[in-house]
Image (cartoon, rainbow, N blue to C red; front, side):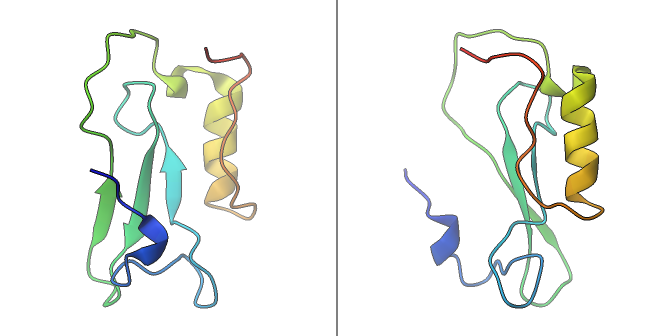
Length: 89
C-alpha cells in the first residue's frame, strides 16, 4: 500500500505554513527511517513506518555519530533529513 504523507490532511507539518514532518529518522532501530507527524489537534504524534519485510540486516543508523547529530539538528533549527557518515547500499 502506498501512502502519500503530503495528502494526509490530518497530519500537518511542523510549521503552520508547510508540511515538513516533525521528525524523520531511524527511531525504531532497524536502519529504515520512520516519519513522525503531529495530528491537526496537536494531541498525538503519528509514526509512519514500513510494514515491508526485509532480509537486509544492518546496524541501527542511530549508532552512527554523524547521523545522531543530524537527527538532533532537525529538532533545533535545521529540519532536513539526516545523513549517515557511510554509504548505505
